[in-house]
Each structure stands twice: as structure tokens, then as C-alpha cells.
Amino acid sequence: MEILKAEDLSFSYQNKYQTVHAVKHVSCGFEPGKTYAIVGKSGSGKTTLLSLLAGLELPTEGTVCFEGKSTRELDCDVYRRDHAAVIYQSYNLFPLLTAEENVLYPLKLKKVPRAEARERAKKELLAVGIEEGEFSRFPSQLSGGQQQRVAIARALAAGNRIILADEPTGNLDISNGEQVVEILLRLAHEEGRCVIVITHDMEIAGMMDQIYTMRDGELLCGE
Amino acid sequence: MENFTVKRLLRRPWLSLLGLTISALLCLLLCVLAGTLSAERERLQEVRESYEILCVVSDVRGTTTEKLGMTHIYTDFLTDPEEGIGGYVKDLRLTKSFTCNGPGVAGQLVGVSNPRCSPLLDEAKGGNYACDAEDFFESRRYLCLVPQELYERYGGGSLTLQVRDPAGASPTNPSGTDMEVEFQVVGWYLGGSGEIFMPYPAAQQLAAQLAPYATTDSAAFLLADNSKVQELTEAAQPMLSPVDPGAVAPKGLYALTIHDEQYRATCAAMEQNIRRLELLLPGLALLSLGAGFLLGFLATRGEARTYALMRTLGLTRGRLFTLVMAEQLALPCLAALCIALIRGRPIPALIFLLFHSVGCALAVLRSVRTAPTAILREQE
Image 1: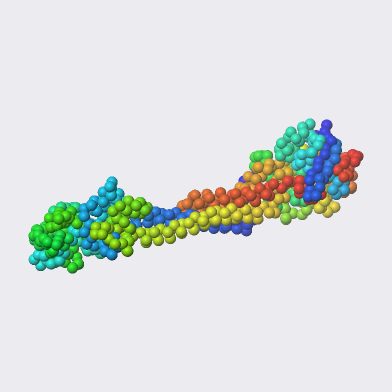
Image 2: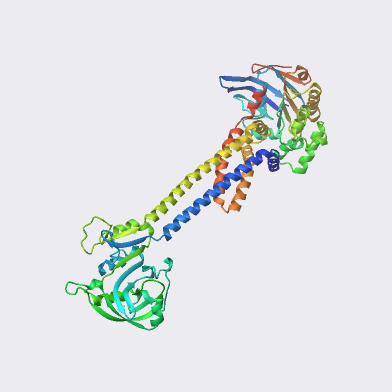
């Protein structure tokens, strides 16, 4: 049963010089408990597809359906807050908030009671390997791998069932990259979340359950 | 969310301190300026209400204000609010002089309608007098105020004087008529050269007995309402024209001089000052708007990615705007509140906040408008 589905999805936008057809007639589905990799060269439309799946943009043609409902009908802010978390390659954390406060932020948005929110934040931070002594550190005091893990903890704490990760290991060394991938795999296989990872690292893509390849805005195949 | 706002403010202390200082300074300036403007307006109003514009009747050429020999037609014109200019007049000062002789006395007998008719009686000009009769200046009885040394001899008693009205002289009686009049001495004054003062109404009564008709030697008054100079000039025109130094004046034609030059100069200077302050006020309000924009711009300049991240976490654009505005306005609000309490002027503080908020909103709108996807595209 697909939790998220793209049907004949197209998206174009105007840059300074021309209209860019970033995504062309893409159709694909994503199931809970599985991991997906979307691979492709730079400019192939991967990130645009991710922003469409996250409800950050509305498609010019076609639909993105979450549990059978189009993002055109959904309140996209609520959809992101409650169901789809986005993790970026960098700039993932609020620089003026500590690691713990970064994880608490979406819980505040969901109006989770303070004590419960702190409990959940602590649990998820520990789950991604952030020690208690590091909770009060600011992002600038954490390593790149730790920052990315805090970002994942934030997505986990909010309880979102879809994790959309844009080059999550792009700025990390091999060891930290492997740790992050392991966490993402665990999220899907043990907690039943749907994890969609955008990457151009074929080694990481190979660890995912399914790979979609994009070229010039078109989805070529799904392995 | 609110505690995150406070935390963010505390974690960039220099920018927060800069914002607080600029806000406090601008708000204080606005309050001081508004206070000065208000005080200047009050002072101007006070000047307009309390400044004494002296109006003096003279001959038509303006060469003399004494011994005018005005008939009652003119004094009636000065006092009648319907047919004359009585409505514009306050503190009317009329005098009528006689020559007089008596035991130890040889000088002038002056009928006065008001203590301000003579500097000897006018306390504002250093005059000093005492009088037992409360209605002295309105009385028709033959009462008099004498120099203090004379009062020691006649005080409480009577003084008989030989009185002559110089205006009563005629071709057939060139020196005028003498009359012996008994005065009751009811008070004294200090200084002077021996004048004796009597009530103006009694003096008119006496003059009517010494001459074919009673006359008045001088007339002056204060303008009742300083804003009605022009109206007074127009209303006085039929009987009292403006001074014309070249006029060939038939006897009995008089002029009115309104001494409002100092008043007009004072008001003009104050009005100019007020106009300058009124120009500064919107300037300062615009400066508050500019400061709001600048501080908002500085605070949000590098935050586009943070705001985009907030949006991806599910914060609506409206909520994001509200949050960022709250963060930007927290310290200016605090500054405005303190200044308003210290200076006791809430309205200028509110004006500062309003303009500061608008400036800030322009900068914040610019930042929160950035679509989150723009960052994703940058990365791609």
C-alpha cells in the first residue's frame, strides 16, 4: 500500500533567462517501511521532485498524493508538520538554538506538552547517537555528522512517517555517512517509515530498497 | 515558541543591544520633540491669551495722546459694545485733568478711571497707593488721593480746592471758570510731583460744571481678545482712524494706535519655531521607519535559510512573519514602554512603535517571502 504517490508529475519554473522544465511526467510510488533512492546528475530534477513530494511546491501538472489525497487539497504546512520531514545536506539546524532546542522546535509547533516534548527529544537524540552532554551544544559546536544526526532526530521526534532526505551524507566523511545511512535504514525497516533519499552516491543508493534514476527531469527507471 | 524568541534575542547580544539602543534613542528623541512642541504650543497660546496689547487714542497725526479734549461721543464709542468698540476693550484708562490750588497745593487734579492710568498708582510700574474707598475709581463723589505728606495733614478729612478746567477756556472767558470744590481725602500715594487723583466719573461731573461740555484728556485700553486686532481696526474706523502723520487734522478727529508690534514679533518667532518642530516630527517618524527597516534588515539578512527551514518544518508564512516580527519588535517595545513611562508621553512612543514596526515589517516581509525551495535549488 503506497503512502505517497506521484502521478504524471510535471513542474516548470521561470528563472532569469528561461522556463525550466525541472520535472517531466514523473510517476512513482513510495511504501512505508521501505527505503528509496533517487539518483541522477546535478540538475536532473531530483531536488525539485523532493520539494514536490514534500509539498513545498505544487506541481504544474499531475498530482502528489499522500494516503490518497492530493497535496492540492491538503494544507501543505500541516502535511509537512505532521507527516513529511525534510532533511537537507546542510543548513539543517537553527544556528542560535542548541541541539536539544532544535529537536524541540517541531514539537512546539505541534503543541506537544513541554515535559513530553523534552522526553521525546531526549529519546530521539540518544537514538541517533547524540550523548546527553552534547544536548546543550550549538550547531557550530557539533561535527557535520552530529549535526546531520540531530536533524534526523528532529524528524523522528516529530513522528513524521515520511522522511525526505536531500543528499544527507553529502557533507559527511565516510564513517559519519555510514552512520546516517544506517539510521535511515533502521527508520524504515524497524519503525516502518518511508525514507526517500536523494543522492548521487551509487554506493548509498545501492543500500536502498529501490532506486529511481532521473535524467533531464524524467524518471528513467525504478530498480 | 516565545521562549525560543527570547533565546534567539539573548544569543545575539550585540545586535539586540544595538536595536535596543537605537530604539530607545529614537523614541526618546520623539518624546522630547513632542514634549517641546507641546510646550511651545502652550506658550504661544499663553502669549496669545495673556499678552497685553495696549491701544492708545491720539490726535490724528499721532503727535500727542494727552489733552485730546474728547467729547462723550468718543468715550461712549469706546465703552458701547453695540454701537462702538466696547466688546474689544478691557481695562479702559480714561483721564481728565484740571488745574487746582489750595492750602499747600498748587498743581494738577487728575480724574482717573483705573489705577493703571498713572504710573504712580500702577503697582506693575512700581506705583504704591492706599485707598479707603473700595469703589474709588467708579465713584461720582468728590473723593481724592493725595501725596503721603499731604495725607498726614488731611487724611480722613476734607480738602477744599480751587479747580479750573483748561478745556473750559473760550474767547469770552480765556482763562476759564474757577470753582471751589471740597474733596474727601480717602487715601495716599507715594512719590510724584504733587498731583491729586480723583475718580474719573466725578471728574466728568465736575468738568460739566466748569465748561460747556465735559471732555476727556486721554484714553487707552487693552485689547480684550488678542486675536481680534484686525476686527478692532475695522470696527474703530468710523471714529478712530489709523494714525496719519501727514493729515490736515480738523479738531476733534482722533486716531487709534494698536501697539501690537512686539506681540506680533513674539508670536511670529514662536510660530516659526513650532513650524520647524512640526517639520522635524514627521522627519523623526520617518527616521524611526528607516531604523526599523535597517535593524530588521540586519537581523534577518542571514536568516533566509533559517526561515526556509522553519517553513519546511510546517510553519505557515503568516505564523513565520508573526514570529519574526515579535522577535524584531520585542526590544523596541520594551524601549518604548520604558521611555513612555519615564517621559510620561505614551503617544509619541506609540508613534515611534508604529513607524518602527512598518519599517521592520518591510524588511521582514522581504526575508520571509523567500520560498524554501529556492534554497533547495541553490543546493542542487
